Length: 97
Image (cartoon, rainbow, N blue to C red; front, top):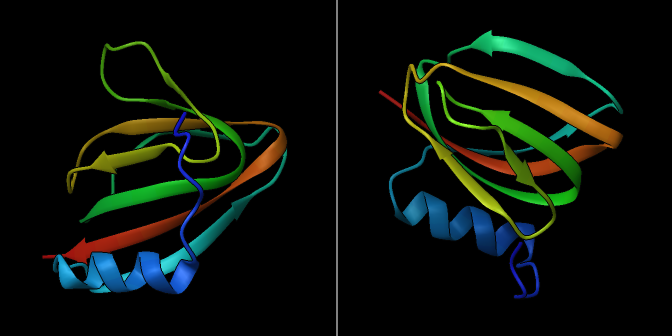
């Protein structure tokens, strides 16, 4: 978990757009939600801002992510998600091909 204060959403979005990401949104997930293995046709760079989740990629142990933690996914990278008892909110930048 990061010890740095969270940026403002606008600052996060501006920084990621400057890196070539074309869409930046806030995603909110309900408590206990489980999303089975899937892929996206876009690359992802995200920052958890509330709650917690476990992100599984391949054979590696799932990463436990909390506010201040970042994660990246390549386009078409298989992954699964499990959200904590309070759900989770994260900001996500997407780079479409």
